[in-house]
Amino acid sequence: MVLTIARQLGSGGREIGKKVADKLGIPFYDKKLITMAAKESGIDPEIIKTVDEKASNSLLYALSVGASNIYDSYHEPPMPMNDKLFLIQHDIIKKVSVDPCVIVGRCSDYILRDRSDCVKVFIYADMNYRKKYAAEVYRIADEKTEAVINRIDKSRANYYQFYTDNVWGDIKNYDLCIDSGKLGVDGTARVLISYLKARGLVDPVQ
Image 1 (cartoon, rainbow, N blue to C red):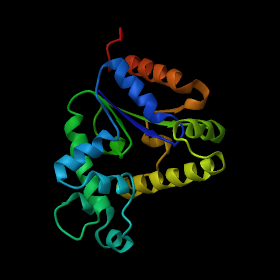
Image 2 (cartoon, helix red, strand yellow):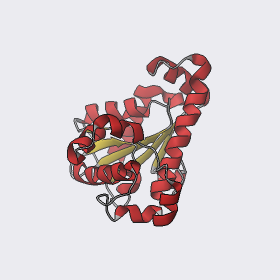
Image 3 (tube, rainbow, N blue to C red):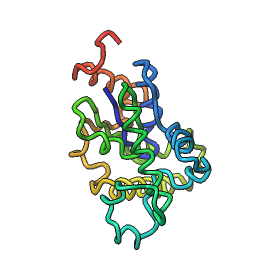
């Protein structure tokens, strides 16, 4: 079983995924994928962080090759760093998902879309909840919180659409969409575990 989590900023998606992974005793992959990508590629981790979950900035490049063609190779220049990173993470996600795990973001739901044991989840919440969560967890100044949330969500949506040709947050792309603002982080994690048990994908006694 692999659980993939797409999330709006401030919905607590990362923390929820970590709690599910800890409860089930399985690996959790989020920013850890950056370290793994750096090790695999030899690219400076700080450079990788600047392009992580961002679509290619080169419009001309995107138009010339088409999003689907970036899968062909990430070894030949002049492929943008964003695309190289996506392909490296694509390969890593395929490798780590051989074993049960939780993966947050990075188009993992799309990359593993053909697997019947992959549960694809989207976590969202209303803006008031997300602003409070972001201010507390990410220490974003209150007057800037909503603007930062909108900017990062837009970046994630562009990234997802560029590399998958699908719409980020569209319910058709997920098995389950949960409003974490109604349940909180702990409550949402419990619901996800109950859902996995109901699907017969994890031990019911866990």
